Every structure is written in C-alpha cells, then in structure tokens.
Image 1 (cartoon, rainbow, N blue to C red):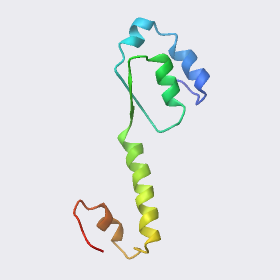
Image 2 (cartoon, rainbow, N blue to C red):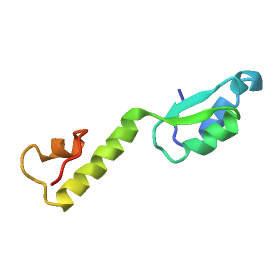
Image 3 (cartoon, rainbow, N blue to C red):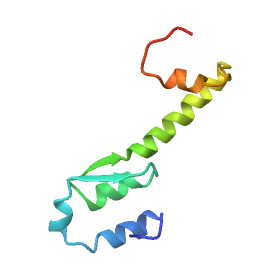
Image 4 (cartoon, rainbow, N blue to C red):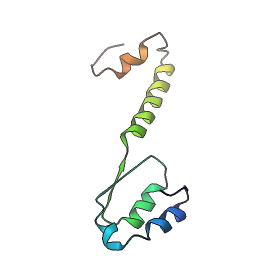
Length: 90
C-alpha cells in the first residue's frame, strides 16, 4: 500500500518490483483518480486498466440524479423509475 496520491511516489514504490513480475500483471483495478492511467502504463506495461464498478456506478448515479432533478422528477420514488431496466414513456 502506498500512502500517497502523487504519481511519482506511487511509481517509485511500484518500480521496486522486478520487471519480470510487473510484466506478468494483466489487469489493474483502480478508482477514477486521473493519475492512475500514467502510473499503470509506466509500471505495468502489459496490464489493462480497469475502473472498479463501485466508482463507475457512483458517478452514474450522481449524473442520473442531476438529470432527474433537471426534468423535475422530484416526487417520491421517481429515482427508481429512471433506474428500472424497462422502456417507459414519461
């Protein structure tokens, strides 16, 4: 664990691992911090960057809530109408 959000600090710690080990890493799951793509590309040359589902869903729900408020769907339960997986006419 690296107690920093500085790209340089994270890269420095991870580069201490042998290149043979780092080349074997296939996927790296991260949150949505903007510095991670550079870190992963620099340290793990063969890895695929994966944004974790929790943070993707958190951002999606925030945006859906903004849209719901913009179209004035403020009555109780309206959030779940948008989240339902059915086509509905409003």
